[in-house]
Length: 533
Image (cartoon, rainbow, N blue to C red; front, side, top):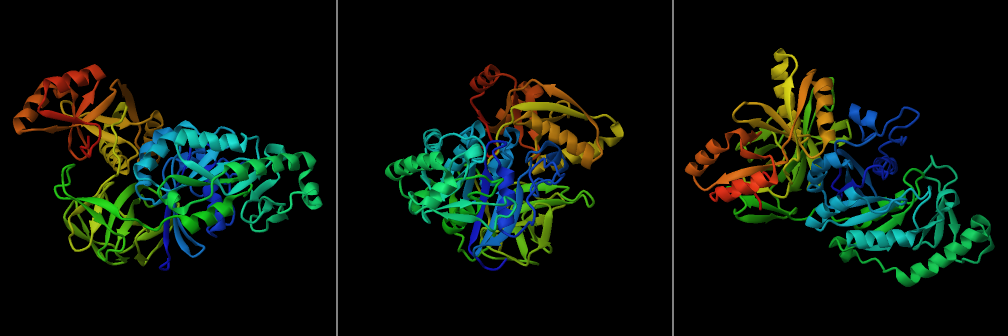
């Protein structure tokens, strides 16, 4: 990509709000794809961003896809995140790599559970949000009611930039407040030739003929209320995460999609300063702020994906550039290992499609071929600068399974598969101290299904899965070696190590946890692997 202003944003929503369809349409307008196919399309086409075999079968986004393209003189990196609750950890990590968010709302249902949770993550960093009220080509809530639902539930002010004219069978298009015209399409499969109906004079005979008397009267009434009640857009309030420009429309039928993309290009922020910690990288370590305009290159890994191309069994780490300039063939410093690594084939993506990139700048997301030496959260610098970027969430799992290979001769393959999948963040892997059993930890049950599918499909391993009745896990810190020795000895059947060999305590019940805390004042229990209270 040329040196254009960067725009790195994610799409978030509750499952089935039309997020993947919207992603396809944005890529369509960006010139990346010629044909935008629905998830679970009857024609047999699948969404470009849903590339994993299981995603095609289930019709949901399971991994975060990364797609890069240029539009309106900006270099855009679009991250399509999983909406399903079982994949919230992958979504949380993705939100650490973006500067802004496009939030999709199903207009028939309003604000839903996952949207609320994802909004909480956005609030942690005051991420700017553009809102798209989707599916107005179907029966939908009243637009005023929908705006009120978003404002009260998500605590953010809404500023409509357009307005739906009817809904469902009565849907005629969307009214653009700035242009005072109604956007319509004769052919939903052709987004580049819309029909604009002049609505500057609501009493014009042509407008009455286009809408019909009943719909026109409803539209007039809504316009009077909107002009009296709706606030004006304030760009600074948007950048501070206080106000969201709102677009109504239909991603499937193209209504409002181009206007939303235009707005994102116009107001979404360029890369911002990011916080990092100095050695020894603990919660009490000194912090620094890295400005994207700093000359020295820095970046971090926020996602790892194995076997994007099953023919080559490859593994890609997704790196977000935070400052400086990266050039192909550069040697960059891997802070965790303390080694310099030469990057010969950095990649940019459209889901599984990829090409080699020569240069990268703050805001860019590039892929690194990975033989297993990178981990989520790894920081890279130039000149051996010792920092680590913060704010990449790691949460205690709530569901656990013991995994063993059906064929003992495939035990090594199982170990390799589980290790790689856990490093990607698909699940968390723990090893029990007393038995050396492999325990998988997950936020939701569907994560186990994905691991089972990928072990069989990509690693040729069939395994036995046994539920373990634990409620959670806590990472441990000890005041001194004696405290560690005593605790591990007394609770050895509940002691596990994570993939980085950190000591963990398996929580059977909340009562057990409270009792262990009361009896062991020299031991600290943490809900995350970053040891942050």
